[in-house]
Amino acid sequence: MRVAVVGPGAVGRLFAAFLSETADVVLVDYKKERAKALSQNGYRLTGLTSRQVRIPVVVEPDGAFDAVVVCVKAYSTAAVAQKLKAWSGSAAVLTFQNGMGNAETLQKAVGAERLVVGTNSYGANIAPDDPYLVHYAGKGEVVLGVLDEAAESALTLFLRLFEQADICVRRASNIKAVLWEKLLVNAAINPLCALLEIRNGQLPRLQPLWHLATGIVREGEAVAAAAGVALPQDIIDRVRKVCEKTANNRCSTLQDISTNRLTEIPYINGYITKKAREFGVPAPLNGAIAALFDAYNALHAPGGTQTDGNS
Image (cartoon, rainbow, N blue to C red):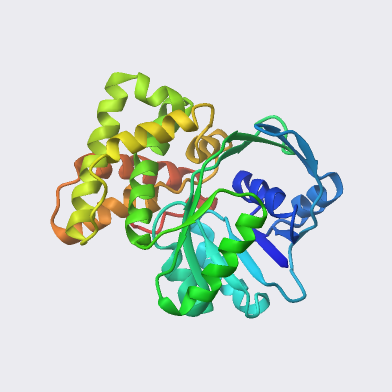
């Protein structure tokens, strides 16, 4: 099976390494120099495993693919969706990106029958002082589902692909609830750990910060309910367990601000804030977080460009 993993960040590299054990995998990058360097040097996994990985990294994929896994930042989804039209052919497409709105963007580009959506709780980060070192910080789970019944065959393909690669994966009957749950996990962990520059496991141990995280989740829970999505009653405990399972992980937003990149918070807390306004549900904590990171993104965008205004 031929698989393209789009996005050579920590998660993209981790899953490309996993899938390369049983499939023909290429990584897709938009930076020519980085693609060339990664192809020549490979990269090393450390942490829960230790191995050298050599996978072709390309800017312009060619040939037929059976599956495409999209791992880019949420703010890059629209650009990737347009490119997928040119080279993905009839391949099944999977997104387990952070934030909300990615699935809808990709579905418009590739068609409802090809799109599978899901969440990923595996923890990984690229060493700040070594671009060829990926730390595998926590084993998690991939949960997959479809927004349209027409994509059932694509879902079956990805379930089989991940199982063969020994990736912990399961199918969800209500993927919208799963996506909202992951959204709230990210809304609680990512901005707070990034602002204080702490690892995930420290969040529940800092009581003032954990109190704030709990408030963020409760606001999101109310917004989800207004959207007709029922979340588990133990959602706070689930957030705590994610922190514990990925205790040594530096969340993606912390990795972003450590390297002066844009963050995905407009698609996380910003999305919650946007939906709260639509439904008339108070969400002041998410609104404050979203405003802070809108300002951060405005400062770090090329040419001072503003974010997309989700928040």
